[in-house]
Amino acid sequence: MCAGSHLANRELYTAFIRLITAFHIDPPKEKKDEPILDCLECNAISTSLTTDPKPFKCGFRARDRNALERWMRESEERTRDL
Image 1 (cartoon, rainbow, N blue to C red):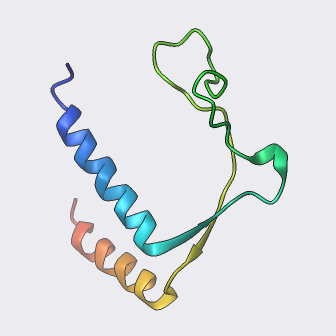
Image 2 (image 1 turned 120 degrees about the vertical axis):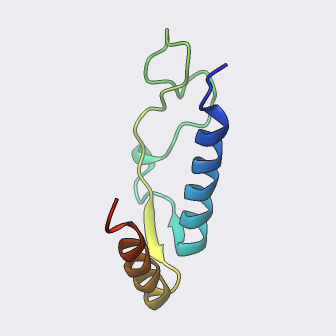
């Protein structure tokens, strides 16, 4: 097992929560751009040991533009010296 898997899972959780909190996620406008949800058909590399999804599109709309801009500004301030 990867030694960093717990950290990676927490980072992904944080990223997903931030995306869901900040944005409405809209489906693609064209049928050809929809994700493939079948677990066998979705893999871009069929012989891979891990899943590498085929490209798909979606739209992101800010739920609250002012809050989003504030969060981004605060994030830049906290990470400025990294």
